[in-house]
Image (tube, rainbow, N blue to C red; front, side, top):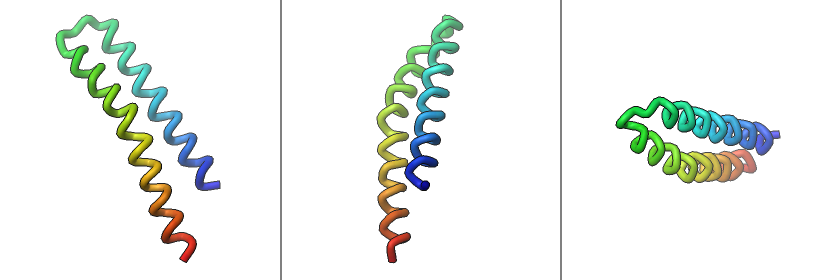
Length: 63
């Protein structure tokens, strides 16, 4: 059950980041490059963070 919740959270966050990156990309703002780099970084960091959080949760849940 917990794994499904984490999977949904990850999916929603990643989809949201990509949608926001697309919207900011269409705005032709000079800060668009920063938003794109932030989205790419978050694409890597968010799933890793949630995976680590899940592992820690499972360690303490078993005891």
